[in-house]
Length: 283
Image (cartoon, rainbow, N blue to C red; front, side):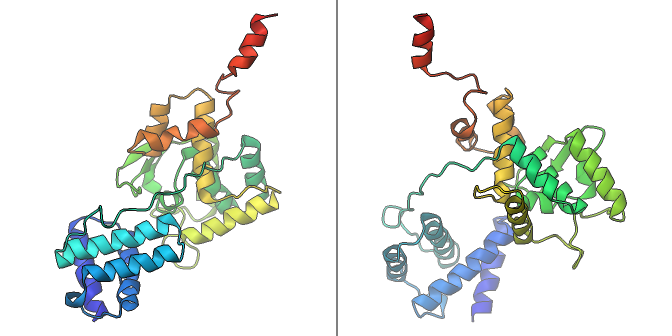
């Protein structure tokens, strides 16, 4: 029965051009939801089942992002398959706690790269930082996405499904060239898995990053996204227009980019406290 439900979800999702990872997550969540309310048939589901399920999740104190994922999956099920509307006033999304992104200094980036002795791994980390890539974007790069002539990287498989071009640094190009010749000149997937020949798992890369950061003696909570955050923050500090940074990152909403105003080095941005300005004026 669940297989039929999954097939229905995938067929409906394909019409809306949802990402495979989103569809997989929806299937897992909907299975969990139906088991929790002890239902095996879609026709047996009610709005009360949603109320019961989400109330239990809130009482358990789950994270807002997890709760909102549950809600999105259930909304999709009810709206697209059951044709039942869930009023947003009755089922509001939980407000997320806002945390500032973790940004590494340029010296910390260099330290991580220096302790990463495997050429392939080092090239991947350098590419991710120097181009501001998400980890999934990095793992899905193909050889044809690298333009030596234009010094750019074509990002096709982005989170927002918007293709974009981003920067290809000279140092990155040198590493990519060395890597390409050493690793049998890959013509399709740029960084294929050594075990499957397909895309490298993102969790494997995250583990690599944490291991290199620990080896470099960095105590910050380092993840793959730190490289992207650092790319944006360092560009802002160097005087790059925030609208250009938004374009390089592929952000649809400028508010997503403006967060880097909070974490960038204010002295490098030329920002001074008015209290210091008063002291100077009295001298």
